[in-house]
Length: 206
Image (cartoon, rainbow, N blue to C red; front, side):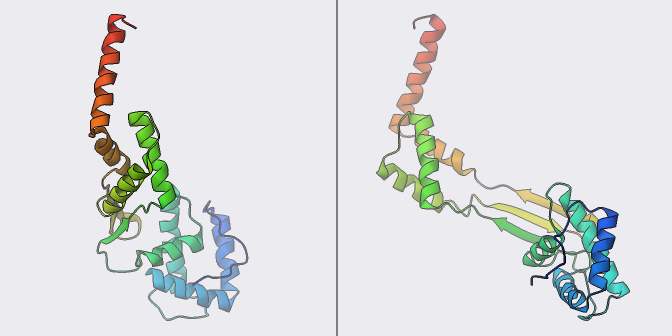
């Protein structure tokens, strides 16, 4: 749920900025209500939805800010963006109380254009020519076929500052296509020719 804050969220996380952020919210019952809903959905707040700025809501804001600053050290996120992303991932807040692992799977989807670009690039590098329409169709279908195996799986566990993540990469799509293209008769011939040219250069024959 979007919340109309008076100013854009600051990812720097300075104490003065954070205090000002809370002061503006505390003066607006509408903002308090909106953020109590966001914090509750994200797992940081366990109380009733309210338009009153309470100690429980203050603790929820503090826990969320600590987690946001922790991840912003490597991937800057605004406050609203952090909460909305946390909600989208099922509520990973320090106040969720579950402590159980949450798994996020990232799948790269290739459009016909991006698949063609990748196939052309690999065939140019491997075979020294442009890909034919038939090759683009064939290898684009291969990319589509390995989407599940090429997905990256990230498992989150723990809470708050003790939250950990373990990422398991899938198949490298580019290397997968390189191996398939290099394994064709043309690819093998180019490889042999490359070895021959290297050998001749070493002998000073060229």
